[in-house]
Image 1 (spheres, helix red, strand yellow):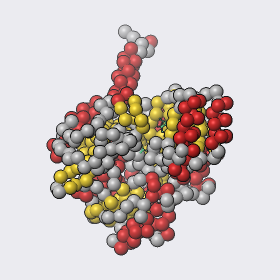
Image 2 (cartoon, helix red, strand yellow; image 1 turned 60 degrees about the vertical axis):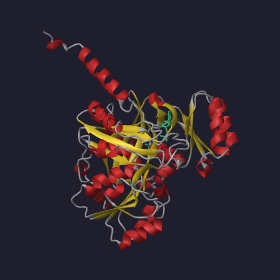
Image 3 (cartoon, helix red, strand yellow; image 1 turned 120 degrees about the vertical axis):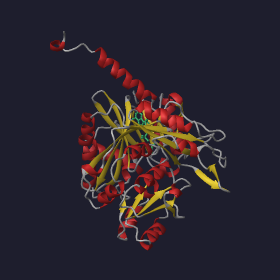
Image 4 (cartoon, rainbow, N blue to C red; image 1 turned 120 degrees about the horizontal axis):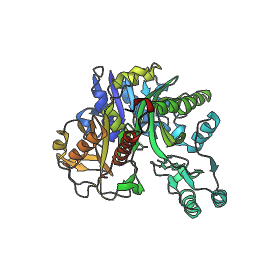
Length: 442
Ligand code: AMP
Ligand code: GLY
């Protein structure tokens, strides 16, 4: 099987790493790839949104399966273009990708399908939006409707902050056309987690859970980024809750998409807020998260190429998506200045040593090679990922490896996964202190 992966970040490196392990894969291409990916896959000098050229390439090289990493080409309809030409591709159509590319669409669909989500209103007019926030009695979240690289959401402490966010998004055009319309919703409290399922157009199969760390500094301080690290699984998602997410979120969403004539095929990533028995959807994405994908791929024990190919044919089964019970963690090494501007072109040392740490993979996100030297070339530079029998072990390994890597201005969050460790320790303590049931007392 010849496989083409589209994208150039840590997510696509992790996908190539896992796809390359499949005995069924005879050749792997990646467009455009990066220096880490290029050790595993033949690079193709085409950008992810160059759909027509990518189709020509896939046809000319008889590619059997194309896998799309990022959201932008999906929203622009790359899957429709491949399908028109009879080329197998894993991902949602442009119409199905609206679950991510329009928050107003996703909210309306959830309301219609009875999927639990915060109350909301949609505005095309900034004055009307301002009037709404000034009369609201509860804290709000202001969201640009369209794609904004994960940065179009402002969680507001005060009505003044919401008014400011409306000006920033709708009038000063912080996210361009993506912010012409806003969704304003009730602010929810609780534990966040990301849930991933794969859908083949007819049915969905659960993959697993992860938790992302979006703010740039330890303790969840500072501006949001694309993701500073992730771990998998999320400890507060037990089997019962997982079954509820499938029944109350994934299945009704897919049924509603099919009813609208836009059956969903691809990765459905639900961002969830959990509080006690209450479960709400914060957002949908229609692809793997980055860096959640790196952590998930460290745990993926099946044959990814066969699973994705089966999903394209509408023949996905539960057995095809097997995650190891081990824990995995991924830690992003980022450039000085990220997520605002960032430095580039600085030499990176120590990657070879880091790769020697057992159960560790160093995925490239923003790197380049100049005169044979590995250099920084973006905000997120490398995503060091590790697996362990438990989360503490995975965290130790990831930081042991990350600490071997150096580049000028390198920044790393030191607390990826530590809140989960504390929660698990708390739960263990609680279990220990629970009085023994009457009949077992001696
Ligand atoms: P989104 O891109 O919609 O997931 O939003 C980005 C981040 O904003 C989420 O990961 C949450 O931390 C936060 N967020 C989004 N919606 C809400 C909400 N209704 N209440 C509280 N926080 C939210
Ligand atoms: N890490 C968040 C995302 O990929 O959307």
